[in-house]
Length: 404
Image (cartoon, rainbow, N blue to C red; front, side):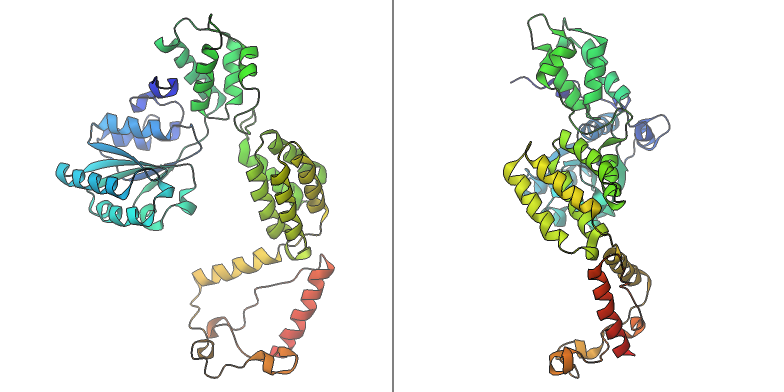
């Protein structure tokens, strides 16, 4: 079975890496580590096709060390045990782990002591944000390096190298075709090289032009504008437009996301917007959004565009309130920054002295629930952008007066 061209052309040394100059450029951190033949445990994270695996391969090749490659999902605990025994035998080993954010607790438990002792140096790779998805105990023992999306010029450089390789012998490709692949690749060099390879075998003469590429793939690999604003900026514009009640702009960004057929990102972002920006001003929006997401999933594209358009219009023109996110963030900040003390003793088992509110008039009895150090704190501050939250404010005001 022939290897894919992207695998054959994988960089052998750090000097072969395309892009990521903030890490592998002259005098930068990874280049200096290799120059000094000394590396530390690290996590490389970024989108697919930006060079995580290539950099890991280049590092272990350049420092000429003992190493092993494992995948956190497909390799078993026994595979990890074998690597640890090899590390002891070699008195040190570099372990490269792909999809490290998927590593389960059993594997983490056997790996942590080895990282602590230094017998294993870890190079973890992930497309997920390590600050959210990777066990803090693993994360604290690693340096974290973010890889950026490759620019169109980076992709073009990689394609030009591929065109000159022996693997594409006799290829005839127009400059406009290289430019076109670079533009639609979404910063993913692997995708670009795979598309080039397929185009090469499209006809016997190995002639590649824009029409050939369009007949194979005529839409962007990922939503990535020519000016490099990128996918996440589009999502940001989407949320800020709905928050700002600009329905036309919200529909524009929705259309961009639909063009990329990125329904999952649309669903996730709309759910966040629903509770962060609309919140208690219109609490019925949550169930409506869930129903719209379920209907969109049921019918799929292109019909889902109608359902999504409808809910985005309603969300854009809905009353807005961020009182819920402001309230919980105040509490989280206090938990981190303030000596909160113990909760009242009557709230702890066996609840001696606790007053059961339902035994009292209107199911309310004056009683302290916050710890002493926070007893006068006010976290929820109602807004008056909707009748619903005005009603909540009235209830809260009455309860606050009863507490006095």
